Image 1 (tube, helix red, strand yellow):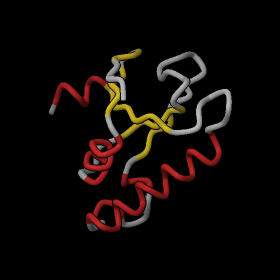
Image 2 (image 1 turned 135 degrees about the horizontal axis):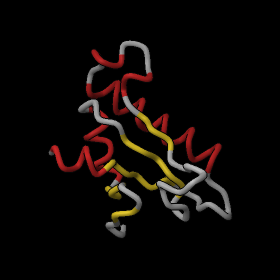
Image 3 (image 1 turned 90 degrees about the vertical axis):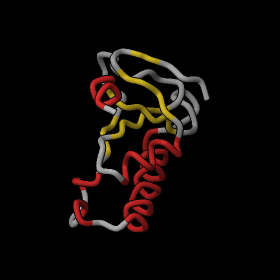
Length: 98
């Protein structure tokens, strides 16, 4: 994985993304051949508060929700032109706070 800072977003690995997701942070998914922050906004924010009871979710439940969210994103948004898998990003403002 290439570490990048693009348009106010920092790319992170899937493992780091899952840990931050379980901690309640907002993670942005984007097809691997596209870059976040473009005028067409290919990035999709994903966080625990999108699901019912997410703020009280256990680590196991939130990890399963993360995997399901990534699978759904890849099914609907990833293809030959955009790339076959998701890349994970956080906004630089979030990154500076950690």
